[in-house]
Length: 111
Length: 114
Image (cartoon, rainbow over all chains, first blue to last red):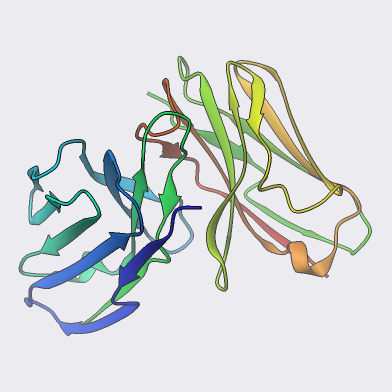
């Protein structure tokens, strides 16, 4: 099956710092999605990417669909306390392939 | 608009008891997914339905787990008998169209089997 490697597993940063996380896959994806999960809640979609090379922003968040279609990154600029949570990447090869999720990046922000 | 609605939000049950988790997908969505989340294994797809029909149940751990979708607005995930290793958060999610599309999650059912 498809394998997704998400890194880093966790990040401890200071408020105001920029954050970068990425996912790589063992196969080509047609869709990359980034979700955030707050404690006690379900994952919430942040950004969806459907085209190789696509760069999309959502406020302080920016995500890119890698040219090789095997990777994606998510950047958060000027982190704030409410950015704390678990960030998941998810990808799909399309057709009958379902979404494969990464293991998540735990973001912890120190004031 | 209402999102995916799951119940119960929290359940604590004794080993051997039957557990039924419920889900109402977003109106108009025709694909429904059940995921399980644990610290060790992350998010695992258990089963997904398209137009109320189970398409892929290869993620269902064993015969103790079963899922049904009797109509477009309701699905259940049942565990019988439950075991402590079933303790996890169970998410229902829905989308329109194919499995590679953006899916929207419910808030989860937090299950503890003691």
